[in-house]
Length: 171
Length: 148
Image (cartoon, rainbow over all chains, first blue to last red; front, side, top):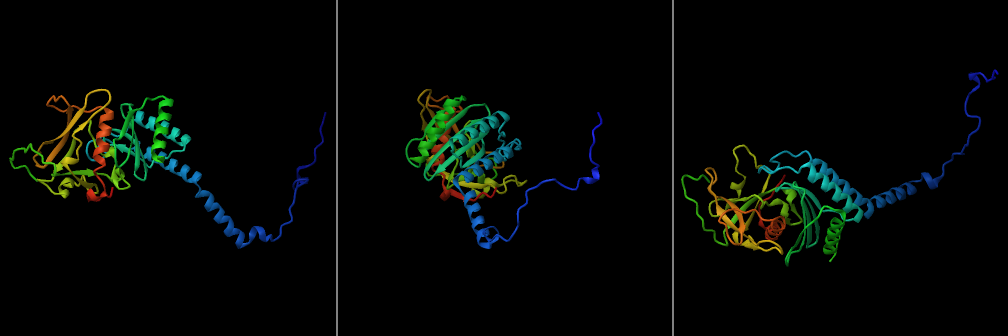
């Protein structure tokens, strides 16, 4: 059955629309609002949440940069962190982000691997990930005996180690 | 700096200074990080009795340009590190002169029983050793500031 349709030339725009009367609403366009909005956005992005997110993003960027290191990167014959160490570091960074504990520094180690260092005043901690796939962690301060332990690669021991570090840094 | 046929001097006095190169990324909030020191391999240092801090950066090809130098005492090296399971390790200095660097020395480790050779420590002993040593290496011990 033939269907009748209007010629194309008759389509000039939508048959219906929602139109808003535009005027100079000073609540939106005034310089006072503009300053207030800018301050509000700056405060938002200075918040602990966004700063923490940014620090984790920086740590991941450092991890990517570390992947490009060559043998002897320290001018002393050290091996660069290998794929196994980098994968473990990525996994630990994800767990740290879940636990909301930001490393102060992420660096290649001269022994071959990656270290995640934490500094809070005189309290320090480190998670060392070796190219062999082993992990060791430690908490220490200016005084007293450092506490050092091997970390198993499963999630529970990793989370337990992260918690021990958090408690030490907060003490 | 050159050896010129000189013999090694095996004795190290506690107050003698040792010079160690470091990278800026390994010095955080006034203290050297343990990841800047090696113990699975023998850590190289220069003896203060036979060299100046600048000598630790000497290279005809500029290899060490921009690195820093810290100075610490022989007595700052932990002499012994225990572990709950496994043998204790002892740490000591060895003068290992090179033709172009007479002051070159190494930090060695061995089982407490003493095999007479180099025995790399376990991971946890290594980390504990490096932490204890780094506690002695603060900004006051920086002789040349690292810029890379």
